[in-house]
Amino acid sequence: MKQKLLQHKKFLIIVGSLIIIGAAFAIWQFNSSPASAMMTEEEATEIATNQYSGEIVELKQDREDNKQVYEIKIQGDDRLYDLTIDAETGDILELDEDMVQQADNSNNQETEENNDGNNTQQENSNNERLSTEEVTAIAQEEYDGEVIDLDFDGDDGRQYYDIEMLTDEAEIELEIDAYSGEIITKSEDRHDQTQQGNEALLSADEASNIALEEYDGEITDLDFDEDDGRQYYEIEVTTSEAEIDLDIDAYTGEIVSISRDYHND
Image (cartoon, rainbow, N blue to C red; front, top):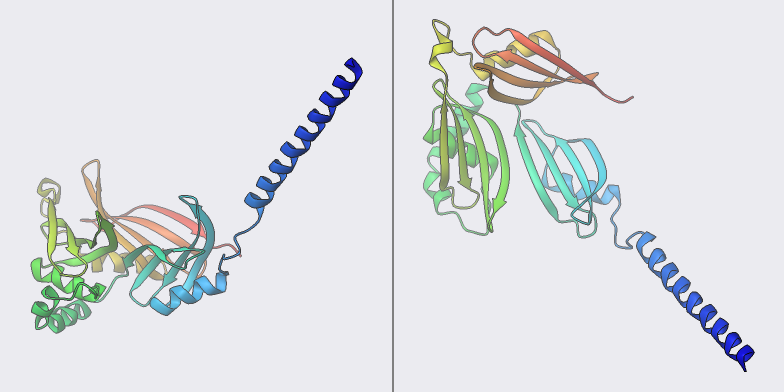
């Protein structure tokens, strides 16, 4: 009798072990198999370039918030697009646009072209998002300065543009509703006049020219910043060999730091 009970107990242990092993194998197979709906790099590239014209300069696959995504950078004529695309649905989850240095007459022309249509922008349908050119014109109607950074963002269901401008007196940050053109928030960071003395603040164009005289390439990012009481321009120049980051003193034009990130062969 004891022997039969022992055999029965062994049988139950074996069956239980097989069930556990089978369940573990099924879970492993489910988690390790790639998603059948995962799009290819070519499909993700097509989605990006159909909406934003330019050259693909970077494409990589990543995982964010338990989602497989493609991170794509597109170099356009006047801006750098940075997109995050859901690898299963093709939805654009995030978009950043960094303005590339533009000529003053181009900015003036855009402003003149959009002045007459300002009322139309303010009454824009909620189904049509304002273009970056229209939002730039709205910002430049509010402040006489140069747009040095522009990002598309959203919060609490409201979509807007984050715009950074540089004037002779201050660094301006604006949030503009992406559909109505309404300025939601604005802030000013006045330049330190004690540093200026008898020197004039360099314009973004002048700082860009200093960078391009030093390196033969294209301006792909420009920001105005301050550290330890010193104001300077942070400029990124893309050349055929590398991406070069420069810090240029905003008053003297001196290049105070240089770093290079060479392209992979």
